[in-house]
Amino acid sequence: MAVLKQQQQQQQQQTAQQQPQQGGSSVQLMPVIVALMLLTLLTRPLSVYSNRLSDTKLHEIYLDDKEIKLSWMVDWYKQEVLFHLQNAFNEQHRWFYLGFSKRGSLADADICFFENQNGFFNVVTDTYTSPDGRWVRKDYQQDCEVFKMDEFTLAFKRKFDTCDPLDLRLHEGTMYVVWARGESELALEDHQFALPNVTAPHEAGLKMLQLLRADKILIPETKLEHMEITLEQAPVPAKETTYWCHVQRLGDLVKQRLHIVQFEPIIKNPGIVHHMEIFHCETGAHIEMPLYNGDCEQLPLAAKVCSKVMALWAMGASTFTYPPEAGLPIGGPAYNPYVRLEVHFNNPELQAGLVDSSGFRIKLSKTLRQYDAGVMELGLEYTDKMAIPPGQLAFPLSGYCVADCTRAALPHSGIIIFGSQLHTHLRGVRVLTRHFRGEQELREVNRDDYYSNHFQEMRTLHYKPRVLPGDALVTTCYYNTLADSNATLGGFSISDEMCVNYIHYYPATKLEVCKSSVAEETLENYFIYMKRKEHQHGIHLNGARSLNYRSIEWTQPRIDQLYTMYIQEPISMQCNRSDGQRFPGHSWEGVATTPVQIRVPIHRKLCPNYNPLWLKPLEKGDCDLLGECIY
Image 1 (cartoon, rainbow, N blue to C red):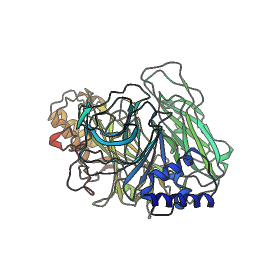
Image 2 (tube, rainbow, N blue to C red; image 1 turned 60 degrees about the vertical axis):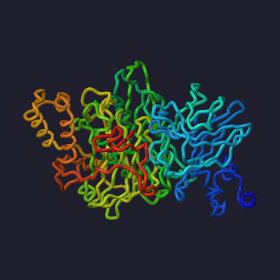
Image 3 (spheres, one colour; image 1 turned 60 degrees about the horizontal axis):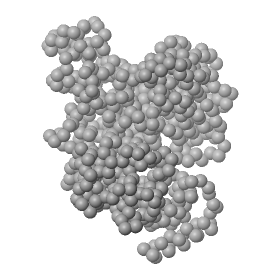
């Protein structure tokens, strides 16, 4: 070990002599990070990492929002994560724990305890909590490997999958990091002890984050233009759900063609702004759009062409940066200078007198990149043709982007998906998009088994799939309706539900929307069957779909019938261009669904002989209709 440290010091000195000093908090951490955390990465010269490592591979978050900084790096090759905690301890604390929870609860959590014994911070214990969250038990397999612990910091690593059924597998979806620290003496030598009760907000907490995330993207251009697209003191109505539209004209900057390389949200009222989108008006360059600032329900008809997505944000998202090879095109001689900013206000307390000026800050490059990027919507159409029965742990609805649509719309070489944002409303608990080529299922585009509607990041994908003409994409959302007494419908309100995956890709195509819903004829036949065969007399065959769904007395056989209809019967396909029109040459009503084989998501590649306790088999725990357990 002494020889290794000496080699590290020599390499650091050589690197410091060869390269200029850089500023910034991330770079100041690098001597500590390199010395303590990157022992497994030193098979290559340190100079390879010294310039770019802190900028792209190091991820950071404050656990308590001000002092305790968690930094981490993902080693995809060795399938492990290296952690560094700054200011974890001070002179009062005897212990600190960091762990992973399935959905933020301390029940069945996977926790590493770090403890001061006899004046030395030299004890680490891998533990797990009881199903009621009251007890801590020592794991028979210790998988928290510490590099260093002192009075202020600690550094350790964990494998993605330890092959320990008592450990939570680290994954690319939303992870819930629990932490706490305290002064009491622990009984870590015992097999079981009570979980310390920490109530002070600055001594314990929970953070949602994507742990296994792609490297951060740096913008190579040094000279950038800036633009803001925001509301202008919009009055927020005193009602639960409002979609507010602001049609505005962009400045002279868009007279030339540019690439958007980054956008970030400007959120003035975090408590009421649920999500936002910017749409470009896809029409002739010299056509004037009516300026508008009001409820989207009264949007002028002429502004309906403002439907091509440029930027989007939802709760939990932050800045989104395009990869160096692609940018979203904007401007030029043939470009219409009008856009529509749409903001979803969620105001359940019906507050009056609020005004909002939220929107986006955008960075643009005059130097055009290799590819034009685009944004495409996958999933379900926003319609009450789809419904979720009450009392369900995780009822699945799937939206299809069928092979005929990609065959009609994508270029011969296909498209590369580099970013994804999954979106539901309040009941969504899991979302995934699967990729099919003929009868073969390829690697998933994106999956979040522990999805939270409060943390809807726009995620840069580590694995960037290529989708070819004739491929199919199936987006499935799972909904928890245990607290509901009646059916939940698809729609725009926060009390309705959505199922969307906004994918960012290149090269750009005319395909803007690739979504589906159950076909009209299929739904009519379903209501006829429910009225005549199931004797649901509240159904009116020419009545509103929403009322018909809500008149059904739901039993398990009727829930099964609804699900079977959704996955087997014909669908209505929205294979739509940027102008809102469907691609010609096909009849998109009554299209067959993409056959999807249901798979239980147990990861057997690295650990073939165990079944994780956190993924309960159907006969031992609460599972959804398909046998896939999420809790």
